Length: 302
Image (cartoon, rainbow, N blue to C red; front, side, top):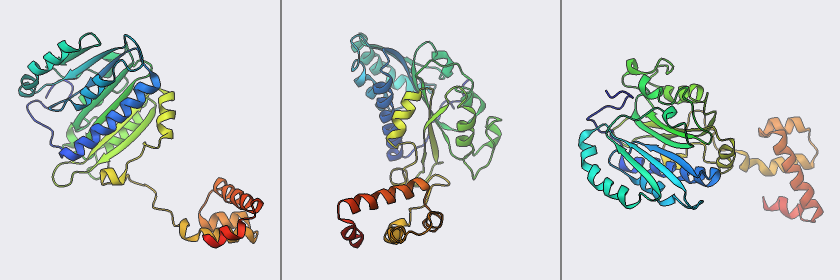
């Protein structure tokens, strides 16, 4: 076991389609971070393994906001076979682009987030394994720079509960890694940008990928876009407690009729399971249609 928890000499099994979706989510979030915070000099930290798609995506964006923009890309690999396989080719890429950024491909375990606190940092701790003490502590209680993002990938279920960090309560049937991440890793990175679940189609343990930040601006912008929650269509699995589809569409005409007959507001909210703000919205619709002399036609069309 490497110092920060990566298992050396073993590859993490992930369905290629699922892994590509995870990278796409991270690429998308990086774009938001880069466009919103517009850092002039910054770190990007990753565990590329056999795929440098995310790293190439970062490389393609350097210089979009500032003349002389500088990016330091930190890539870590503990598997000597994988490192030797990519070292020569990647060093050629580094030499070709050294004027815009510095790329460091290092044959060692990934450093804790606090190591990069000198600059704004976007880090993807793509562990794809148990939330061990070493891995969890890479982010837990680490000093960070302003405008920092940490994305972390853990097993959604633990096959070896004895290896888990003490803060991660062991329960094979519950996503304890997600709960512990959102509770304890938010001390220095208080805003949860998203928490996505990825379920394997055949073999392999399901994964959870969580993104945290200390940038309130990024959180507000990203949250408005509505990407915080797991997409069942994309990821084939629903978050625990996700709301069921609303039944109101069937009963919306009854709701409008109840408002027209001036039924009690509290009874309407209880009957149709809506909030007071939603109720006010339906009332505004009635007022608007009435002022436009279109109310009768509107009710008939529902």
